[in-house]
Length: 395
Image (tube, rainbow, N blue to C red; front, side, top):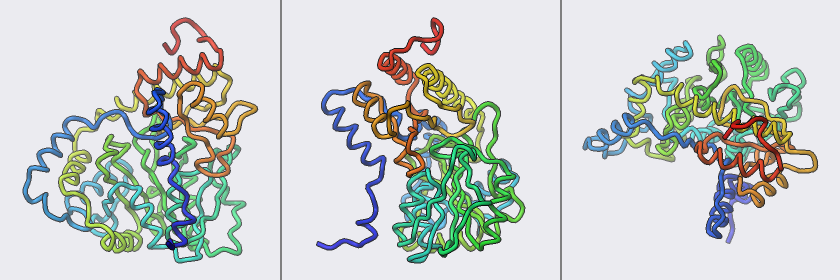
């Protein structure tokens, strides 16, 4: 039996493998607290669920949806970008709804990467930037992100000679590092991309998951960014709608059009009732989002305090759902993850799951219930033989 080479060189998806191992442990009666995947546990608000139920009862929504999303949804996305970022978008040419941003990220490589062409893929990074490139028979070219640079690419020392590079992937607030970028950085990225005739694909799903007064920008706020850039965003993190699978890509009209052409030959669009739900999410009261973020912030602080007690370096992220921490001396990323899983039933993601530059680090997601966070704190304190700094802290 012969398989396409693009499949044989495609590794199993990291979180699929992790889910399988955790299922095996649970089948053996081991209660695992899973900090591995960024799967929001704060439920979708009731009013959005009710909007979905009402929309599902509409007979028209049982038919095939529009390939390019309902016009009302594209307008709502455009209006939200105008209100949130001050970015004007043409809803007919610069906005495309997606079946979750992951689907668009994987498919868009088919639109701008020919076989043998290279894509600059950050390292460490969300794996789909690399995997989508491989599925398009492209070459993922590592773009090192280093702690001394704040986990930002160094454009001044970026050498792409010898490669035909057509796309640069960026992601801030960043997964897995939690790093953030300002408009000055995005301006440098846009100028570099224009100089080298490279497309920028910016993944921005954590724009509304931020703490301590921080407000992440959009790359499209940079003047002229739409000449070279598109931005992906998602309802999964912003509106706690991960299971409903809906996202968006916005920006450069040609790229949006080409991705729409790819998608219309692969899928049949997004369930119309979920599109109506998304319209409600974008156009309704968002006062609950800061309250939701406060839940994540409390967990961030509790876990960072614990890691500091253990002697692990873990900066508090300004945004995203992740803590990116250095493994203790004497461990690799994998051996540390195995140790805390086997000895304490606590699952973290090895930094190497996101690339070679992630070695020496591990990631913890904030999408674990408060009760489980407290239980994990107790387990890890016991494992590393540390006591609370003062009575009652983090209990």
